[in-house]
Length: 416
Image (tube, rainbow, N blue to C red):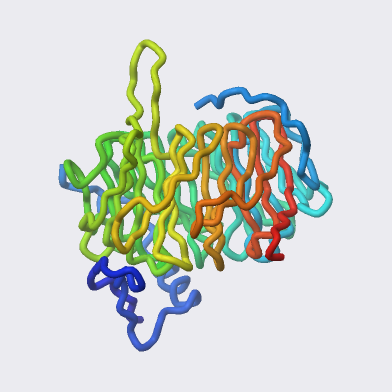
């Protein structure tokens, strides 16, 4: 099967922007990608070795609760939330109480609890077909459950867990750990492949849309693009090409031709996945990088980044409450959207230029990236929002908060 290849990155003009991908006559299908990943050699070894060298702030209680449902089974902060991609009817949450639940969004009824964790559950998500759900705790215990039967089908223990992600087309799970290693398993057989890191934390990672590569950011600011089939790095960005501090977040364009990384150095870097070259650097004037000092001082970092699918725009969310929207055509700052508190996560709507953010003041906000105006906001949490997710139609948002609750918000906008 032939893949799409990124041949060049050409940033130009106002109407056209990024020539990132040249499609072959036959574009790979999800089945093709799943078949490719199933053919990979999942054996442990040295083939993956590279030879080249939070607590949220308290907020005042909300005046009103705009949510349509509150899930209150957790007894500690809720750290993560995910919706099943097939029907968007089920949510999975994980929390500080070492517990994880799969529950119905419509009425909050618990389908089953993902039992057996011994530390805070910081990662929880459904597979691409909603058949499986994976939960991972800070100590590195990962469990996978079959949703239909509510049974545990696989478990494994690694070092301290930093992040975890399902493959977009197959029952393959990827995870990064504090020792810098990245693990990949077939589920439920458990066949394993390791991508050995530099000995510092693999702080963030994402599988590219082609299903054959993954980008991983590390605590030392280095970015590595891994070939999942060959088990080696295709590109390594370090020194002036990498970040000058831990990489905090990563996103990729819909076609996989570009990746966007953010760091505590307050810079976002745009990288071609074909060449491994930095093709854009974005920073906002007045944003001070996060520094380690004995005394309290003003700190900042980039917490979330994302590509707009409808317009040549990217968004960068800062811990100081700045939401910056940049024009990819000119690589210039287009808009700033101030928040009352630090931004934790952002997400673009798939089919419009609307952008959603959640922040430490406990609010979900919707922004129009064309004007920079806030469309509306939703409140109800009495502590910081730590994670949120949208359904496909962007009609429902589910949030996870430090107030020990998850909430479901039915989103109403003037254009609906």
